Length: 358
Image (cartoon, rainbow, N blue to C red; front, side, top):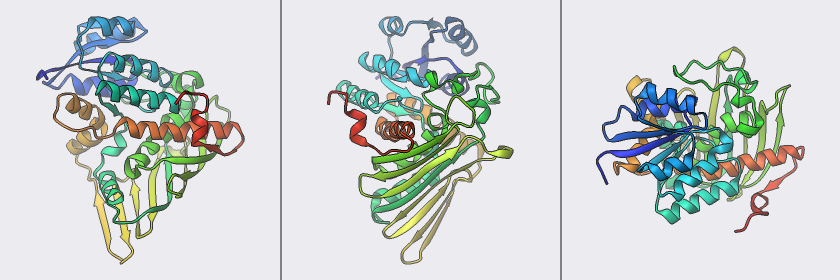
C-alpha cells in the first residue's frame, strides 16, 4: 500500500468539518482527495477551507473518477446506508458516523459487502476510546467477572434545542448542523438516533452481546422527534437490562453511565467523569481514571475514531470499533423505535429481518 492513502469525505456538514477533516488534513500519510456533497456550494466551501482540490455533488461520479483507498461517510443518518454501500461496492474501506444505518437489515448488508470485498468498516463511536471503557471491555471479555446478568445504561445530554431544530452548537467553525436533528426523515428519530446510539456503541463494544427482545417507550414533549427513551432489553445470553436517557438535562450537565452486574463482580463506567469502578466477589476493587490530559483526550476520544480509520487503511492499526458494533447498536435502536410505535409492545430480533431475504 502507498505511504499516503487517498481518502474522500462523503457529506461535508458539521461533524465532517469539525472533526474528520481537521484530523485527516494534518496527517502526512493521508491525502484528502475529494469531498462529495449533494450541496455543491457546501462541498466547495469545505474544500477551500481545508485545501482539497476536487469536489463532487454525485457520489457515483466521484467513485468512478477518483482513485481512493477509503471514504468517510458523514451524511445525515438516513443517507448512511446508500453512501456506504456505494463506497464498499467500489472496493473502499469505509468509516461510518453513528448510527451506522437506520435499519438492521441495511447494517447487515453493509457488513456482508465489506466481507466480500475484504474491506473494513470503522465506526465513529468515540466513547469507546477512553481507557476506562477499554479496561471494562478487557474484564468482560476475559470472563473474569463471569456472565453478565443485568446492566443499566444511561445517556443523557442537553441537546433539546438541537432536537427542536435549533442550531446552538459551539464546536467547529465552518458548517453547523442546522435543523437536521429535529427532522425525523433525515435523522430517523431524535434522542435515540443522535445520542442513545453512543451508549449502544459503548454497550456492544464492551460486552459483545446482542439483543433478543426490546420493549420501549418514547416521549416527544412537543417535538417532532423523541426526547426521552426508556427500554427494557433481554439479551441473547438471558441477561436483562435497562437502556435509556433524555435529551433534556436542565443546567447543561450530562449523565452517561454504563453499569454491568456479572456472576463474579460488577463494574461501573462513568463516561462523563472518565472513570471505571470494579468490584469482584472476593472484595477486590479496581479503579481506572482516564485522566484529563488534553493531548491524550484528543488522541483517544474526540479524534480517536477518525485517526483509527486512517491507521487501518495505512496498515498501522487494527479496527478498534468495527461495523459489527454498529450493527448490534442498530438492532437495539430499530427494535426500540418499532416497540415505541406499538406503545411498548415487545419486538424480537427476528422481526427486524422478516421482510428481508436472508
